[in-house]
Amino acid sequence: MTTCSVLCYALSLTGQSKDTLEKESSFYVLELMLGKTLEANTDFPKTNLQKNIFFSLGNYNFKPNKEWAARLNYPKTGISIGYTDFGNSEKVGQAISLLPFIEFSLLKKRIPNLNVHVGFGASYTNTQYDEVNNPFNRAITTDINWSFRSFLYRDLVNKNNIAYRFGLGYLHHSNGHTRLPNQGLNSLVASISAKIDSKEIQINDDVKHNFKSKSQNYFSWRLGIGQNVLSEEFNTKKEVYSIAMNAGKIINNTFKFGGGFYYRFYEHYYDYINNNGTLLEEQLPHFKDNPFGYATNFGLFATSELLLGHVGFEFDLGLNIHKPFYKIDWQLNQGYSYQTGNGETIVVLGELDWYYEIKRTISSRMGLKYYLWSTNKSPKHNIFIGAHINANLGQADFTEMSIGYTYRYNFKKSSE
Image 1 (cartoon, rainbow, N blue to C red):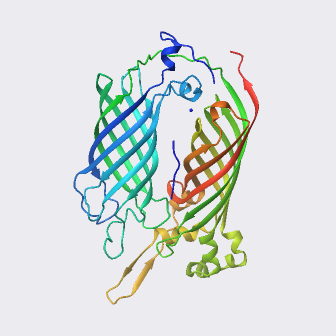
Image 2: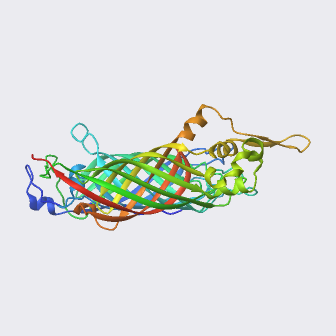
Image 3: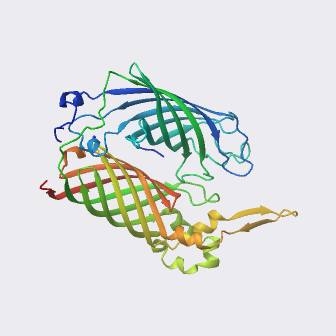
């Protein structure tokens, strides 16, 4: 599992000169957090106080060629590295995280100095589930995982280029369904931090820009290769191959909306059919007549993306038209087994209820892209690589790396 890291015109100002705004400044944050590691499963190991230390390096994004920054009211961006002690060194362990982030001012005029912070990246955890030695920690099964953090911060004191802040937030670590069990580690924490500006900077809330409203049409395609496991019984990683095409609009060189079609082929599904798995023989023997066709998935999706120069943050919501093998997938993953008094193993399959129908129908996809040419310059042709988590509704399905191409056309500028 891997992830990728996480912007053309002059600005005009009200109440502040252009020269002042062009002096883009960086900042550093030292942050201490205390909180609680939430139980991931029944009989999860007991944990004491969770302790974190994070160091962040960021920018204010006040450069005149960053239209996305002006459109988003000048958010701060950067990267954080953190160390987490989950409160049980032997059974849950520690993690080191690396997360690109973006931070927005929230309710600036009503509640000054309130910010929302979102980071998305990767983490290394040194303690995992083990069937013999650590059977009750079903949260983490791999050393490399996806990592996510979401925080609210309030500046308490600003003095000598240092802002002392208090924060409340949520931390998450999981592997994107590349090995099971994968309940994920979730934490609620409070933080105190010092944000240190590299130089004195004065931010005027009345800053305005002179970018004109505009839009472009686009067409894009991508090829992807992902990995997942089928169930705890079939817990070896195999590939998921995908192709997708979409088209839509790019608005103000910052917001991208569209829709398209995706196709996927699951090696695990194909192998289960070819090997005449138990549930297949009992329920769906006709799948053996066309293993390739019944191991595929295709559907329609709507896509949205925030373009931040070389980086894009993307979220897709899809509708599965064809995913017949998910019936077996669900029964394997939602079921359980137990032993009777005489040593007989009883297997209970997952129930095909209304929740199954929803998850069979709705897909989602979230991740980061890196563009070869900065989207600030509205390039007609662009190439990107991406790292995404694909899900059945909100439950991880597979982790994917992709490469793709975007073509822009029909540039339209408003007359205002």
